Length: 214
Ligand SMILES: Cc1ccc(Cc2cc(O)c(O)c(C(=O)NC/C=C/[C@H]3O[C@@H](n4cnc5c(N)ncnc54)[C@H](O)[C@@H]3O)c2)cc1
Ligand SMILES: [Mg+2]
Image (cartoon, rainbow, N blue to C red; front, side, top):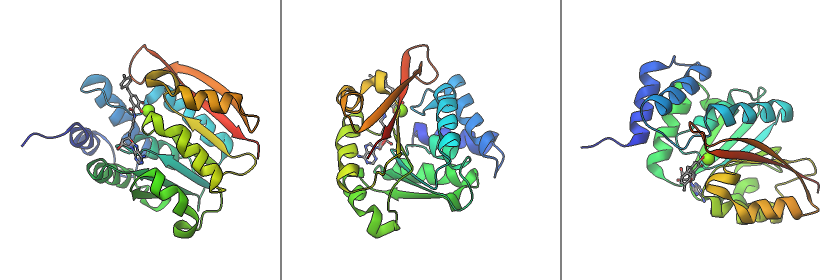
């Protein structure tokens, strides 16, 4: 039977990356996506912006919405301080299975909790299930029409505190117009746009960093 693109991406990691070396896992995926098959990872260019925000925030608790194959999960987890926790939500079981193996190849299982399920169901359960009071950093990279409802849900559930950072991928391409309008016009957020390109292409895209003001 035919393999899937995520399965071929995992194969490239297992073939070209060194076990326990997150940077080599990231490099293997970027090489696969540039030379073999495009895939919707945040990529190397926007990935550098993601890295700089993670390093600046130095978060103890991170939520990622939309794991896909675990590329950004590995980038983020590799920069976390000891005892920090990254919870990543993925509702497609096939993608979740691939991501678990990519995260394991990088040797980051202890820092990552991959939850198989939908953000709308799991955001309200974060505190009771994982003992998380608030998130220091949230990386949004799931279906683009879920960014706004999930942000409002996180506010309602008290998961954001004064200074929590939301970092959103693809605010230009594919685009998240309702989310962008909300975080840029709401007095409860201070937003900043980081211009970049759609992963592995010359098409404009960017990340929006929004600080929750409480
Ligand atoms: C027109 C066009 C098409 C594609 C592109 C290129 C392009 C570039 C990009 O960086 C992109 O992130 C995307 C994109 O569509 N990303 C959607 C990513 C979803 C992943 O998250 C999972 N998921 C989706 N909703 C949920 C949810 N509620 N709870 C839990 N997991 C969820 C899915 O199971 C997938 O694992 C597309 C650009 C332009
Ligand atoms: Mg994306």
